[in-house]
Image (cartoon, rainbow, N blue to C red; front, side):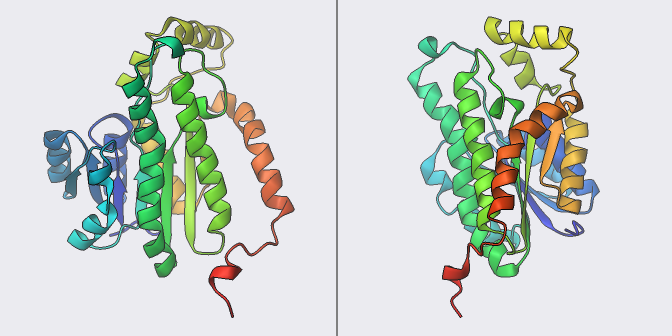
Length: 268
């Protein structure tokens, strides 16, 4: 996809990976539209980048209703939807608050599904678009101490894999980013969980984990959209583990590769 003057909508854009992606996409010539609950932060960043900002609480169903349509009515179609927002859990399952469970699933899983559902018809009609999902290494490997977070990200990854098959040959592309340690506040918070911290320290002793910067992730996200790459993986030293996790989906796609999944929607 040519990003020059393309419109890129990024959720969770107030800091960390989201803010880095906003700058990277703007540097690539895109017009960025930023969402987050932090009104002042996204407003300042949008002003800096010559973009637009849309305060949004992803856990509020009323705010999500018709959101993409409101954004598109303001300044044209969304060409790239970057579902980046996410929140973590830090407690053991028996200790986690019920309302936090709901927030994690609403933010990490339900909101990306709903925003995708809103953006997809227009992308298919135009014959072009890109859906970007910030998932996690926790989607494909167990992470003690982060069970609800793992569940939400695993659901997001499987959603993206299935959707890729549904929209085959429509011109719409999908990239899923499976990320391990990134230098953000979220990583600092999750390592406060004793179970997860013990696990990640063991993996570091085995030289299997390494941090990356938000700027590196953002650069890879831009390149993935430019080239139509289906997955971004960090850390690279766990590339093999991630490839094995992706294998069942790839095999299934190959076995049913000749199927036209949309023939019933476009009868001759």
